[in-house]
Length: 79
Image (cartoon, rainbow, N blue to C red):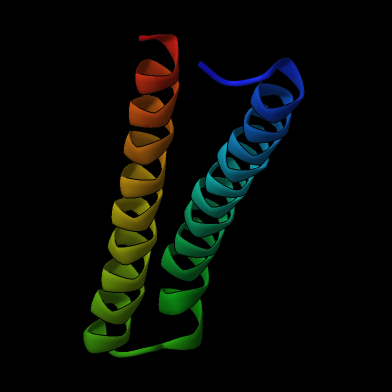
């Protein structure tokens, strides 16, 4: 069993990681939406749209893994 101060430190780390994942999700979505809107206006080719799609997917997959790790650590610390 962890000491209260040790648990507090780990909770802060997990909270920071959660905020970071949330910021990555929000930023990826805003950049992706902006690219979808600006791309046709600038006459960019479709391959650039796919590049932004893949970058957004990579950001979402990374955020999913981070949130999964947070969930596992919190679940394991309760047991």
